[in-house]
Length: 121
Image (cartoon, rainbow, N blue to C red; front, side, top):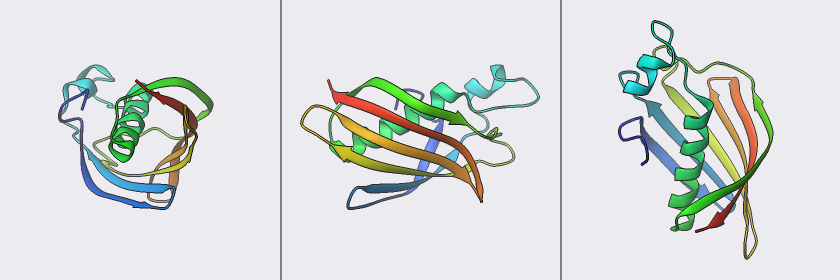
């Protein structure tokens, strides 16, 4: 985990090419003290890192992000108000590239949609 203690995985289920994880953000983590004081917001780069780490867990290898497309930040994730997130990764693998269609959501609110391409490092 690049940012130790940023989140904990409560559930991680992989069925066929779909990974569904439930994570809880640590609202006391230092990253939220600077982003933003008094009104913490989960940085987009941290969300992308969580996607990468969940994907690495699935494939059992270190990955490099090669491309992100169709990035849509649709709602703010405040870890004090909505610490529990459902992350759904749908995978399309080839020999060289692992393509992940992702959504981050809390309740019925979708906070992020993105397509990420990784390659094994």
